[in-house]
Length: 76
Image (cartoon, rainbow, N blue to C red; front, side, top):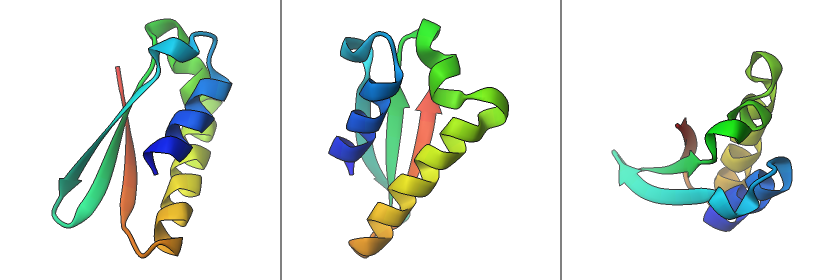
């Protein structure tokens, strides 16, 4: 899941070297924490949060295929 989220985020931003994804487990659920450069936050979130919503849907669907519960937190 980390690789998928990293791939998606790096292709959206202007500074792909500043993309980082941390993984932690909380209450039996995998939480992926995405960090990008401040100048790229708008590109990852999108107008009205549309892009962030779609990223979360993709990662959640990929996790379900593996039998995992996965959520994405976008941190600044």
